[in-house]
Amino acid sequence: MSTFNYAQYSQVVEQAQANGEGSAKVGYFKLKNDGDIAIARINIGSTDDMMFASVHTMNVGGRWMKVSCLNPLGVSGGQCALCSAHTSNPNGPIGKSAKKLFIPMMVSYRDPNAEGGYTAPAPVIWDRPAAFSRELANKLMVAGDLRNTLVLITRNGKAGDMQTTYSMDILPENHPVFKPGMVPVDFSAFNNFNIAKHSYWEKTAEEIQVYLTTGQVPERVQTANTQPAATVANVANAYTAQPQAAYTAPVNVTPQNVAPAAPQTPPVATFNQPAAYTPPAQSAPTGDPTPTRNFTGFSF
Image (cartoon, rainbow, N blue to C red):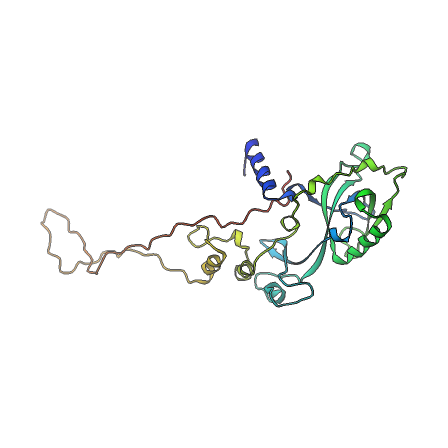
């Protein structure tokens, strides 16, 4: 089990913030059961604030991960190997490119065990199909900047129901139960927020090819001698090249043309070969190519 002290924890948090990973403290929005509700302020002032991405879903080590599609909007195949490999990948199924909308919100969940019956506001991302943007656009037309109003979100559908829908209702400021102070206007948790470091991976064409070849993402792949590869291309080569047999010194080789030694001295074997075997030099790694770790899911 990994252990660390407070100073190490603080250093990790500071480094994450320095890298623009404000997403380290942002969770995911989820209503689990039919009829569950939450009170939210949505961090969207206009349609220009909406965050979209086309992503593939693929299995990496038993976990389903989202990876950005390399094709422009409306293009299939072309530059993205995942588009053409989704039906024939030997390392596991790959989902077709799906258009996603990522909604940043401050949310308070209904909880009978919490003070006042609702949890403290928390920053989350709500992952929805891109078509849900029309619902948001309608709310923007009715209420204007959604950061200035409370929204009641209700789940309609049991757990696991693929037909589940969500309703969004704009709440008036004078609502008898849901008061504006329940979710203050504070979106500082989204400062320096990077959705690609929170909700999906951005990979290059070379890194995607490594996955299609090995079933692993490059940051988890090592070369045969367990040293980190210098580049993504080297990682791929490590898996396509045939392994070389390790050198084994000959045993009990009879020396040729060697004069016998004095009786009291044990005979010394010599090899009739041009030169002694010299193992090839191991080039030292030029640096740690491991990409910056994603702090997704790590609560700071």
